[in-house]
Amino acid sequence: MSPESGASARISAARTFLFVPGDRPDRFDKAVASGADIVILDLEDAVTPAAKDVARNAVGDWLRAGNSAVVRINASGSDWFEEDLALSACSGLLGIMLPKAEVGSALDRVAAMSPVVALIESAAGVADIQAIARRSGVVRLAFGTIDLALDLDTTSDEVLVTIGTQFVVASRAAGLSSPIDGVTVGFKDPALVQDAMQLARTRGFGAKLCIHPAQLAAVRQALAPSAEDIARAMRIIEADRASGGAAVALDGQMVDKPLVAKAQRLLADAKSL
Image (cartoon, rainbow, N blue to C red; front, side, top):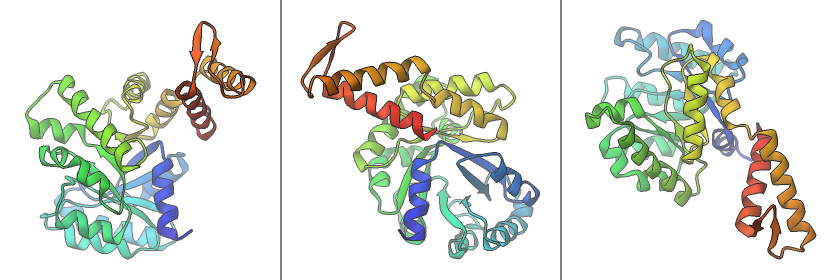
């Protein structure tokens, strides 16, 4: 397996993505030690214009020292995009998170250099979501809920829920892992984060962007099947095995192929967490 394909597989399997400001190298190792599946070193929103160059240099030095992370670069058209993109040459780079991802030359360039987490946070990006998901090099879609709400001039959760469905469908149709849910800003309240992830999971999302290590456990808890769910899934698979694959009743419910597949997926999810 090539380093790039290994990085893509890591991104595809990840459940927790933890942002760290790129100008805080003192936090990089701590972020890795937090147990986040993927650390995202952020050169965009978390870094002021005056600190962009310092942050980029710190990120590059850390990656070249043998460490690994995804890097969120600055958007295409910004003053820092070209220099940020040069980080694709760093051996420790797992992938690039491209903000304001839309169909066009910027996405094509980034995807040719590195695995891409496409952060879709504009109306134009949503309109092109199927093409973005199918672009070679894009390995995951991420839902930029805050910036998208600003772009759409909406405060309606219902609007964002409807748009979120497009992320799930586009990911599935393109053969990508389930999309990454947007951030929950209230990082001091684990219950709020857990509720948000549980709701997102019912809608087809399988991971979350996190802004603080305190959010990680809540995300994992939300994604973990309950003991009751695991026990029932095992009973479904056993009933299917005993019937030789024929449809069979269990607890008043017909056990058929879709239900068996769902049980198998649940057990696989439980094993991976």
